[in-house]
Length: 265
Image (tube, rainbow, N blue to C red):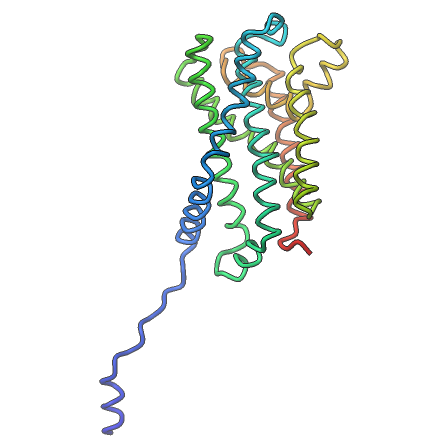
């Protein structure tokens, strides 16, 4: 009895509450955001190419043949989204996989899908920030001002369009394990995707090339963003571009998820 009384008087061990899903996501987002902010120079550099392309298209003598001011903004946004997704996201995932970051994260209570959702959410946030900068520059430089509803629809379509290029990036890191090879193939894939989008609304190289460019991933995204900036002019081509974007996102993301490896071996 005395022993039982002594045992009952001992302080009980503190209860350990398992981490909640929301807590896990917050922790992952906080960690990924911290890493991103520490690499602020690379983040700022992602804003420069779309601004440079927009300025170049706006001042070029034959820039109007590409589709006008609205199309130029859409092309600049397409370039920025592709840059962040195909070059930035793939390099980050391939590097962390090579360093064993994913292997260490997988032994934590965090479900595997939360690890990727955190990274994808951060990429989308970067794309939205880039889009706001480009839209502000368009209003200042080219007096391209949209209705509030058009701004909201454009940002919504930026989120939607990100699925296309993030799907491409996921397919690259899913099929290729080597960091150097991922970076090289990413650059090679980035150039034609952006180039086709650039001529998606121009017949400079003929109608056949224009048709191919219009229905490429870059061309579909450019058409979708251009339609979002002019809701009154939303047409059947915009709906078809939306459908094409959905198909591209599903196919590329499916490939990337199916063959993604969490370790470099």
